[in-house]
Length: 244
Image (tube, rainbow, N blue to C red):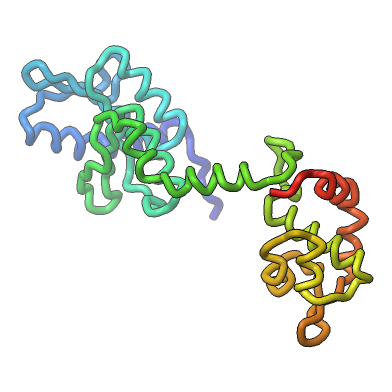
């Protein structure tokens, strides 16, 4: 037996399944509700308070865009959807952040239980609230930017090796080890490379460029020699850049 392809009617039927529980939820709070009022899936009023709910199977950009457009004519707007399976994921938290910044509420309906849950109230959350929570990330961002000796990365690319501050330091350590004949102690490499964390870089061997040949002595691996060829121009630029 082959699976039947979902059609537009299937989608409407699924969205229709959201209507009754959400309508009942608001009616219990004293709202008068109706469906499909000037293309709004659910429109309701209680005294001077007007509310619109856009029903969507999934929370995606189209749903957020449509809800934002409803805000032009209705004071309070929700998106009504089925309880997301990924509600604990970073992707869902990002969507929730966007809704909070836009002041769009989110209502979730359990597929089996029909239970209605308000996941986010339709109140605009000030940007300063989120910035206060992410001060550490901001400091880390600024530190990484300021610590980079050269700024040579191209934005908007994927699958490309980025020149981070750590890679810059590792390249200077690699070059110093090469100048010292391909085998030396962390102390000697540090003197030549001027990299404070030389010992850690050699020990951690994040890129596979180094080999611990014996106590207190490291050498360059084949991958390290390949990196010297690959990054020679970058190494020359790093060497010509003033130290911190």
